[in-house]
Image: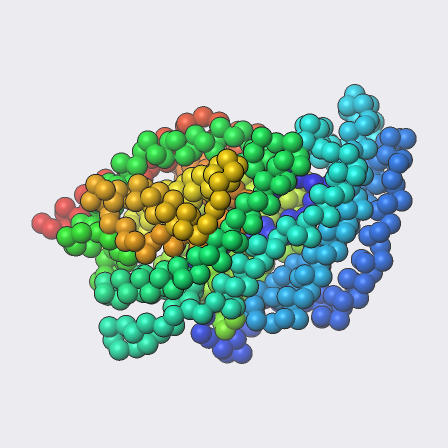
Length: 624
């Protein structure tokens, strides 16, 4: 995301998995429900704080025209502005979390919208800051940050403004862009309400005679069922129903793409991707190299698909088989208490302090664990309330994948916690490019712990399969999404339209290429053309590639930590505590991995093939 004058990390979130949402919230133990009073004691307290904020933020204009007068004046302006941003985040998060607990509740949705309007107006009123900073001689700013203690904390922020000078407009132009933010989330908000609250999801009859509603959450549950006929009908019915609204979804997606194009042109970038990546100072080559490398190594994905076909004992692998349990006779189920013990034990390599905070998160209601009626599907960690602990949303169903999701989100939570603890607010929010490193690092630790403690071949095979599934989903699948997002922006930037039918064809062609449809490796049915409509990440402005790049980074960083290298562990903990004190590429270099090279990609492919070697060996031994 673009690093603006007001550093709002409104959604430091990761949406991974959705589960059935049919439980009565009143029956959920308090331990596994958020305690939002840590943010505000009540809705009324929030309202009073919002009213104070509404009266205060217009005063940001008092510094207008004075920033070049002295280092002290610039420091006063930035202190005032960032303090506003900090309070805004806290207000927004309270509304956002409450809304996610029941997406049908219009009261909290209204509060979210209210804060969005306040944020846009505040951005417009502070639009003068960057142009005024750019009018100051860079040598003067460098001198001021050395001489004025109060400016030292803003060194990275000021450097970032200077770096983006060619893409920063006049005060009037920046104000227009800030005002435009009132419209910028229209497509994503419409998508969220339509798919979470209003969409007419279908019902299907399963093989056991049950008739079930297949919404986004339950689709992800039933697609992993053991009955193949059920999986096939759930896939077809779900995507055929979504496809009936391809015109609507196409229009929403086109609206999102046009928004990205508008901001790119207004900020003098060559294209939307360049603007999106430049916000974190990521070379475009990192994105394009990811797509190229993945396309050149699809044989590794195809090896896994052939292995999955062998383990499922099917003549032909279909797309609807991709989420079926690899071993139907191994049902790994865990209570929250059992999951807690596994996660805490697996995180031991990161030290007692790390583990103690994780335990605190579980005991002090940082987590809203269970699926309940109306609750937002998926999972995320929200750590942008600087003076408060992070909050995690899950939809826990007691399976091993849920344990993996728990440790994944705890990775985000701990990066937020440690950065907020170690960094002042202006550098506490970590770059999105690094966000998935901490989460997938934790997954690797969990996998290592499970394999060290479990001797049963069937369970080991299941755990290995789960890990390679994570590699497939987090690396190859997200790279496919990244290529799709790149292609649709390229089409629009060439002046082509993006109708639902066009998006369908592009997505189907791309999916069939990735999964080896024409080679007979995995048959991708025609209904899969609609899958893009089900993916919310296409409204996140070139976000998904970072899942794949972060996965390769964590694969490179975790090996020395598991080997007991204390210096590597210290570098990693320093990385988790670094926030945005440096650019993402530099932070990862300090941690021990260079994302501008092919090294992390090579390590990831080697790791995946190594895991599959062990799986094939276990399969061979089990047949003897």
